[in-house]
Amino acid sequence: MRDDRFCSSNCPFTRAIGTIGNKWKPIIINVIGTRTIRFGQLDSIIPLISRKVLTEQLKELEEDGLLERLAYKELPPRVEYKLSEKGLAFLPILEHIKEWNLKYEIALIPKETDRITYAR
Image (cartoon, rainbow, N blue to C red; front, side, top):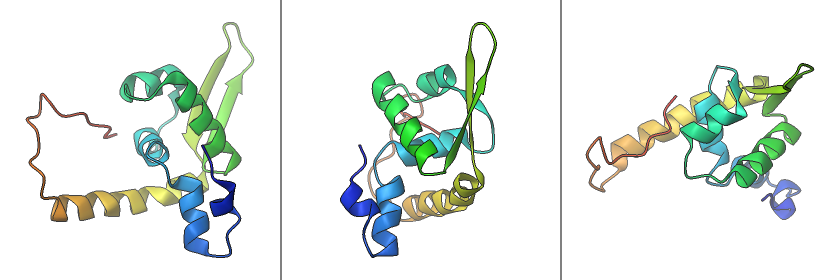
């Protein structure tokens, strides 16, 4: 859920955190990456998110201009999502965050079979 106090702040960093600052949005952006993807695919790749929350997050990402929703007028209806130019510009920032975490994480990394990964 978006916090409008953050989004309307005078501070550019606070506004940025208001746009992408919850646990699911960066994961969704990372999973989509440079491809076009359907809702069901996202739902299966990110199993810990509820369909309701995924729908809300996708809508907010679209409203904030990070995501494009492509609806096709066919039967059955088909909807796909892809990152906008603004969303694609965020991918290198996510890569830096991943590199930072790999460099400084101190927690034990679980075995590959125990790990939940949202890599694209």
